[in-house]
Length: 96
Image (cartoon, rainbow, N blue to C red):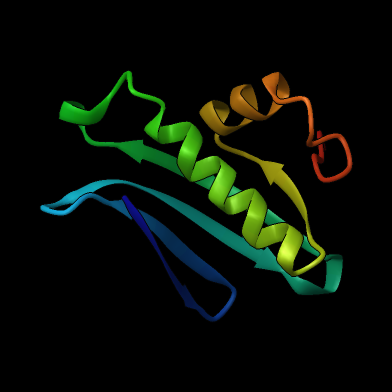
């Protein structure tokens, strides 16, 4: 599995791919003046659901945010639920 981060302006898409096809994607918007990344949407294609692929995408967004010293606001309800269950994101998670 490989991640690709296609950043364009203040937004971007992180894709997760296997050897053959796209597994899923996460869209985000960056507000650099607020040092914040907003996760807008997480999608895992049907044939890959239920295997933790969505969580992998959220973890990659967290890694990207930490590399840039940004906080993360999970606007997407799935990303919010995943991050609330994680133990090591208190320093980066924005609830509002």
